[in-house]
Image (tube, rainbow, N blue to C red):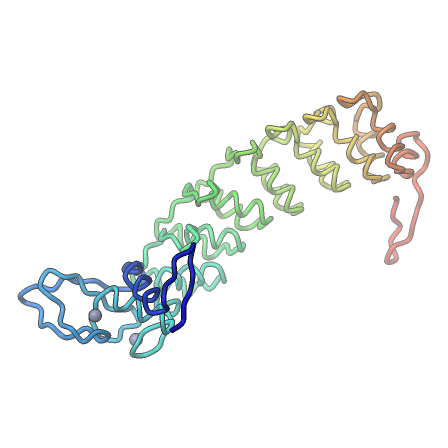
Length: 331
Ligand SMILES: [Zn+2]
Ligand SMILES: [Zn+2]
């Protein structure tokens, strides 16, 4: 007899299996139909244990549509053992209606999503990871699916277990069109995550310039700082992105903003040796004399880090020029 030991207690395999079967007695409603046996019900034996259901007992039928009503624990056991319906062998995922809607939304399949909704799957049903169809569509940037779900009544303010809404996910993944569609549907631009980050911070982290531009165009504050004092301009400076630096400063971002280390965007840009972006930050008004909490200027940080291009830029020397892929690039 096969013996397994769990925390000092020995079980044989059949005891474990029985324990498992007895504990897995619930199947998601998205996988089964349900009915209670009553006097009017013609009792048909459960296809697994071949016992008839008693009056008052709830029986389930898998949504693969094989016409057998069985005990829920028997059906659960069968799914556990064989991976699907005992009759047609369809896997649970192939007949779980919530899973089917969720995967259509994840994949951007508008017609499959519409079919699921028309067949009665709820527009906001939660998948096994607590996401709604709208959140799945937003994460993957599927604008048409978002529009469809909103038409069916999905709310843009629903959060998942991470307290993130659909627009938050779309910003974080840099899906500009999805963000635009969610804003049309009433998505809230004042969202703050647990670190005090705005949608703008999240979009910056995605690196999607067009998502950042859209949020600024729609009026999100360009100067907001998270709970550690980090602004969107700090993030753009850390990436050395001239386009984003210009865009943010044009929209109210402050070059003098300091994070919890007392560092300005220029400190980061110079330390990381982005010559052209450092020059741009200086041209756009960054202070050369601002010091961090340790009393260091951007130049001192850059020098310590051996960031020669940035030091030259801070000293006002001309940038070095390279030709990359046929284009003149200032480094
Ligand atoms: Zn049974
Ligand atoms: Zn079946």
